[in-house]
Length: 64
Image 1 (tube, helix red, strand yellow):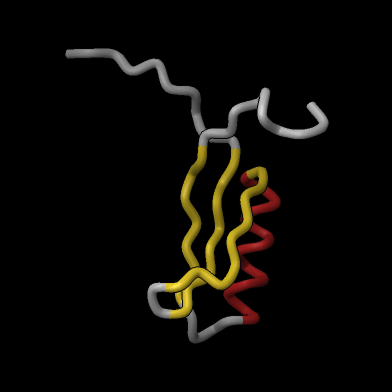
Image 2 (tube, rainbow, N blue to C red; image 1 turned 90 degrees about the vertical axis):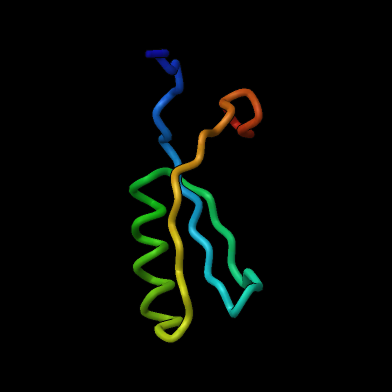
């Protein structure tokens, strides 16, 4: 058995889909992403909204 040394995802990527096309793509902290996802589900009730964990490189994030 091998052990993985992955860092838990602290951010989530929320996308709104129109068929196979993404019309909105937003990455934020888990709490902010949950609020964004809820708002997008209300606004685009007939479209598919996905939320998936994302690993963020802290060196690439502006302002850190």
